[in-house]
Image (cartoon, rainbow, N blue to C red; front, side, top):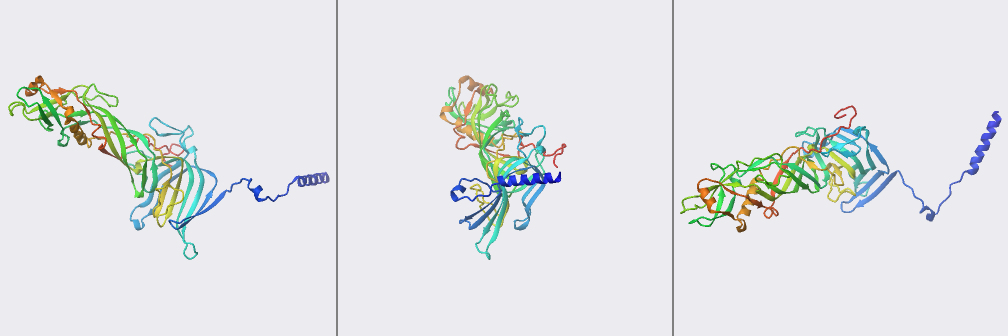
Amino acid sequence: MKKIMLKTLAISMFGLIGTTHAMTALNDQELSHVDGQALLNLQNSYDSGQGINFSKLSVQALMELNANIKSLQLGCGGDKGAGCDIDISNIALSGLNPSLDSLGNPVFDANGRASTSAEITNPFVEFAIKGNSAATRQVVGFRVGAEQIVGLLTLGTENSQNPTDGIKSFSGYMKMAATQGEALTKAATFGNTLDESIQGRIKVDLLLAKPERVFTSRPGSEGHTGITVPSMRVNFTMPETIVSGQRINQAVVSNIRSSIKSIPLASGGDMTNVIGTPNWSGDQLYVDFDPLVLNAVGDHAFFKMLPGSSLDNLNMNITFEQALNMIHNIPLNGTGGYLSLQSEAVKWQGTDALDTAQPGWWMSFKDPIQLGYLKTQDEVDISYVLPQVATAITNFLLQPANIINVNTLEAIGSLLSEPVEKKLNIDVGTYTTNTPATLTLQNKILQNQNVTSNCFGGYKFC
């Protein structure tokens, strides 16, 4: 039996040998038709402007990673003094969320965020080397990164007013994509401070009175209550913004444009974006002017807005100053990214045109990061804007075309302390286009920055 099995095995081996093809040499033309890809790829390049040789070793592969880092502190102390180049706590990297809730917060499926993985395409390590001879060569920098990253990066755990974790110090380069948003303004009273005084023209139809004169509102006068400005929903557009620097802890976004079509100043106006039910019934302004009679009588009046009055086309330029540790969700939709250390400023190959890594540790993301629809959680105080609005209103009311006509009965009534009531639609668009009203928002909680845990078992961080 054993002899039969050995013979059978020997015959099978000879059969296999007989059908095996030997390696065949290919000429250049034949080789040109062969495709292949190495797992490891080494690239060398030279930047004459910097005098730096770059050597980049990349892995041509797609890697998956789910990771939590309790604390990342790099480049602390040194010649820059106290603090760290990068100081971030409670970092989590996972797969990208498949959907968003009504506020724009990340939502994962029933298995949870911890069951997902970020996709990292072509990770690499790269060295920046100066000098061409063995005696003078020196490594001036190295970096690790990836050509593309798809996943959700979260920083910190609490979306609160004064978080203690997240980005405490950042050195690097990051672009925030242009996006839309909205804020709720806090109800205010206009006209009750000296810098909110307004002027305008009136034409009085009264015997022995000079027809035209200029009036001025007088905050603080008896009976002067001001005008209610209701709480409103204000939409804005945020431009693409670069956040870059060394050891920064705040992002400053300038030139956020907003235009408010209509702010009702009495009942009966456009209430589309008004929050709540304002009460304008007690509103009035005390205004004075040249006396109506014999240069001695009738030098003031009360003024009330009739239903339908409004402030129209107010253009605003908003600056948003946000602590970086209040930005928690950073979706990575295929952007390249790297973490580097360099002894001098280095412009790494293939990075964004404005991204030059500064001495020390540096973190960078190449493509704009979409933060989503930005909506503030608390109301915004607009009292700083009101003096600027007063200037725009005065510019409008002083125009001859916008003179306020006061008839005889109204003029006589004003002598008896009866308020003059007029419907005014004050269009300040012309006066706030080139010089928009400015407003600075600081450290506002954004409703779409709630953090989804990257842990099993209900833990906040693990």
